[in-house]
Amino acid sequence: MTQSILEMAKELSLALIETGNVPAEDMQDTLQTTHTTLLTLKAQEAFGTTAALPAVRTAVDWRKSITKHAVVCLECGKTFKQLSTRHLMMHGLDGRLYRAKYGIPHTQSLAAETVTARRRKITQETRPWEKTPRYLRAQERDGKAPAEEAKAPAAAAPTTPKRGRKSAPKKAARKKSTRG
Image 1: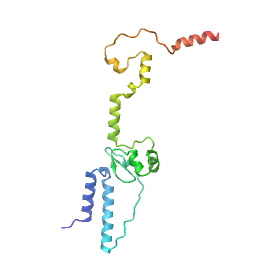
Image 2 (image 1 turned 90 degrees about the horizontal axis):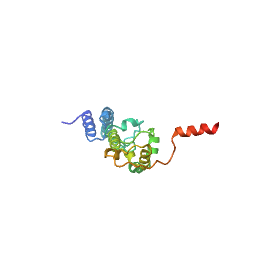
Image 3 (image 1 turned 180 degrees about the horizontal axis):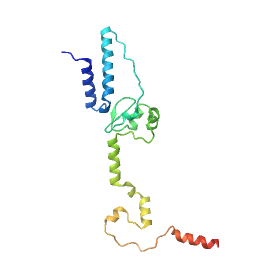
Image 4 (image 1 turned 30 degrees about the vertical axis):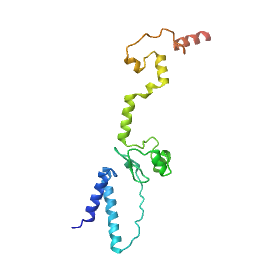
């Protein structure tokens, strides 16, 4: 028994979704496109023509290309967890040009939402800014123990006076005395 074109389109669409090549939200669009393509191929087969299908370039909504688990490259249609600079260079683009070409805001990540959420979680857990020399100097200046030292029992605190900026109230008092 031969399958109808609708059944073939349905199976092809489901296979694309199961392999992760198409997001599940786009099932209806994929099904319609696949059905139309199969009808065109059947008509070409019936008339014996071998002309290639016309390339249909529709307006692309970039929001559909970035889903929870995948990002679809709008240039080639491949699916990734993130669009790397290396992949975009294969198309002669970089992140800035890719965003400009498809109208994507410059603040929009070119990574799947799960990847972005995982990176955010790791950053919040490791708190890398607390390991920078600038942060450590500021903590020392403010008299606060850095996060790593706060967990350990306090050793002998330095007794030397702090050098550097004078406190704000003394500056204000000095300014008043020089104006009079």
